[in-house]
Amino acid sequence: MRILWDAPIRTDDGVVLLADVFTPPGGGTFPVLLSYGPYGKGLAFQDGYKAQWDYLVERCPELNDLTSNRYQNWEVADPELWTRYGYAIVRVDSRGTGRSPGRVDLWSQREAQDMYDCIEWAGTQSWSNGRVGLAGISYYAMNQYQVAALQPPHLAAMCPWEGASDWYREFARHGGILCQFGQDWFARQVATVQHGVGAAGHVSSVTGELVAGPETDDPARLAKRRSDLGEAVSMRGEIYDWHHSRNPDWSKVTVPMLSAANWGGQGLHLRGNVEAFSQAASPEKWLEIHGDAHWVDFYSTRGIALQRRFFDHYLKGDANGWSREPRVHLRTRHADGSFEDRYEHEWPLERTVWTDLHLSEDGALSDTQTPARAEVSYSATGPGVTFLTAPLIDTMEITGPMAATLFISSETSDADIFLVVRLFDPEGGEVTFMGALDPNTPPAQGWLRASHRAMDVKRSLPYRPYHLHTETQPLSPGAIYELQVEVWPTSLVIPPGYRLGLTVRGNDYRYEGELSDFARSFHYANRGVGPFRHADSRDRPAQVFGRRVTIHMGGPHDSRLLVPIIPDTPAE
Image (cartoon, rainbow, N blue to C red; front, top):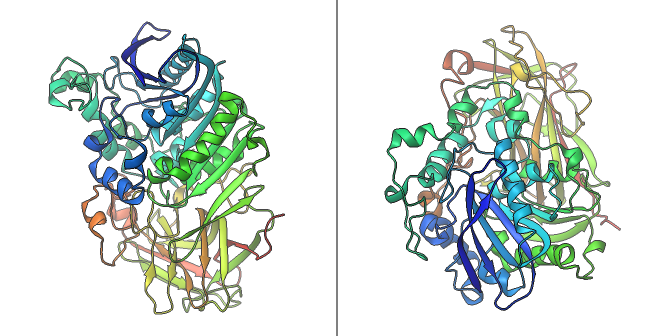
């Protein structure tokens, strides 16, 4: 392949961003796959993300036969493979990161406009056929939604792979509760490659150049040239224009889209891909949901084949039958961790049997409502209380979004509700799964700060309550309140003898079993919740969120979990 290092792209305000361009050998024009992000285009996957790289090669050993992996970057397309398939690859260091100068302001409108300019640049180069596609994971997926809403003329298709779509609800605050991921991630993965880190940072193992630019600035100057993401998130407890400015206008997202989600993406990306598929105005959109670690399927032969069919159709004009592809492709998850491919036509599935499982004082979770009023209390600092179904007689599949209705009272003026949908084998052992970033992830989770219980009635659905998060409504200690709690989607085929559980607690889920070597070594693994922790004492002072909460059930207080049971009859 041919490589052009540090190609200059001038933005509308005069700042010049730098990109690496990879094209097939020989002349001609090619469709373009573009990515724009803050991880340093010169930082090799193996060098910057060794634990993730080792896991990827373990899961996909065929990669070593398909490519030298020399030009791989974290979360973007491998140019060695894609140029072989007839594509040009453009990787842009976002403003203020890697080798691109400027001020870092992640997911801002400024970044969206920069990405627009990069797409239009790529669409008009001599080696381009004028059709630009967007591909990439996480950050490189989230900003696809933003720029698509700006409708750059040369954007022809996009494949957001595991990308959040709602800045407040999926990234900053789950149910109104501050998520600590932003501050941890920014310090570890962005600040370390900020433009100007220079000699204090990484050296490219391919070019020998400094990944973060030739100059080395002092830390104080670097700090002034970046927006402190962790502080910006923590200081905004409710939704403001700052959050809205980072969300796309879905009515303007009309480009063909393949949205790829992960059942294990509890805490960041899963909801985003599902909501993007549901909300985008594009008449040509598809949803795919897989499993395993956050980065594996994107690079797997299965994942690459899926992306190729999509992009070949829209960027090359191939008549490969993609337009007849069923709109939903699910890899349903079984209790043993295996997956089964199935095609559907809509989300949620039309044949879903929505079933209420009622909470009982004796710890049961059943389809029978308790007539008598009862209550169960728990300490917000402890493991909470768990409700279990009886051992299943027949195999049961639950696939889709979930929601809980809880009647609670608190000793204080507020309460944070953490819901964990769990699975237990016939011997009572807990079954967890390889999540996007944690190898002991439970099937599903949901969160809600009780003072954020106000609902957007127009946007709420029975299986996906939608909270406003625009005001705080304190509780009167001891008074009973009804809460509608969104539980993120899941897929689970449960064998006979197993039990489904719902744990209601006042803090993050914690897996108490043995940890694998990967769980011990991977910096984001955290006993089941990965980096998506909610333990900031400034946001959750103990005197408010560390007391006792009571769940009320039975009679007029029908606390329950709505689950999507899928009958055996397949889609037509």
